[in-house]
Image 1: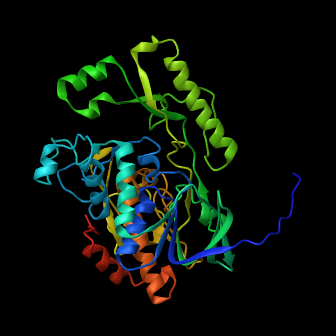
Image 2: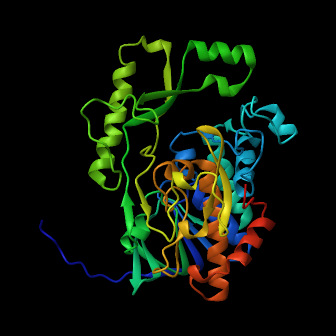
Image 3: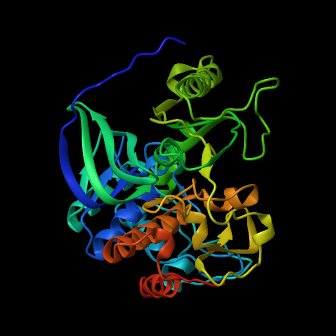
Amino acid sequence: MEKFIETREVPCIGEYDIIIAGGGIAGVAAALAARRLGSKVLLIEKSVMLGGLATLGLISWYEPLCDGSGRHIIKGISEELLLLSIQYGPDDLPAHWKTEKKGDSKLRRYATHYSPTIFALVLNDLMSKEGIDVRLDMIASYPIMEQNRCTGLIVESKSGREFFKADVFIDATGDADILYRGGVPCVQGENFLSYVAHGFGPKDVEKYTETKDALRIRRWMACGSNLYGVGHPEGLHKFAGTNNEDVTEFVRMGQQMLFDKIKDEPPKDRDIITIPGMAQYRTTRHIQGEYELTINDEEKHHEDSIGAIGDFRKRHVHYEIPYGCLYNKEFPNMLAAGRIVSASGDGWEVTRVIPVAALTGQVAGTAAHLACTNNQSVADNDISVLQNLLVEQGIMLHF
């Protein structure tokens, strides 16, 4: 492969306490937590809307905040964002969770569908109200490392190539792009081909006419695989999601599947409202942290837990996430948030969804603030101090 050596001056255009790469749910939660504690925060997002898969990616189901037996266990910013997702738009949150904040194993869980476009608008408004600096249409492309410490991020945008400085960095890209390029050991994942768009047809209009519920006029139009690989095209390889060729193939094949599904239908019988603006991968890359969450952690307590969670697929299942899932101690000022935390197998499945991404984002923002304030490594944060802050923020540490 032919290579070129590039040398150019890059202007430094800002300095922050904490920079967060990735404006999905994890990044938004990290920014909120750090800013509310007093840190100067920058949130960088590669697209032109916040929310990631939850908005631009059209995966507009906020998975359960309960454990399936009636107990509400995921709280804090995760619950705040769920309630904001439905404050100005349609929802199907069960009435018993709206009024009583409890249920039982026979009732629907604390979960809801919502309008992804309205949610994106809400998140933009929230960042403004909280005084968080946001850059959209900007790619955090490369960390500048001195030994294993990150000193800043090279970014690319319409303004060209620029540089931001910070004391602590949170990778919420969903793919561990910044941590991986900074040298943090990572594990590559695999994905089945799946594609979800939003559309409507006559039956959806009938449902809306009957119910006057705007949520009923829009339905998911799904192609390809389910969570377990059923529907993945026979003989097709799995997708990594960490290089451009792979992403291009994944998206174009998804679009082709959807087109083939609808092209012979009567043109006036349905419409596609929107297709996803990003690749709808589930598991691309995660870090090798100080602790890896696996299925062996089901129903296991951890003294350094930073949050209790359930399993969106099954009832009566509990995990506690150790703080060590969010960092590698060899990299003193870098943290992971969202689906890239250190987890594998079922551990990866339960940590990659919206509520837990918000939870680990909130923890990462809080831990980053502590490290910045005390001028210390993220690994040296006093776990009891961190846990006390999280409890004050409403997080349940132990199930």
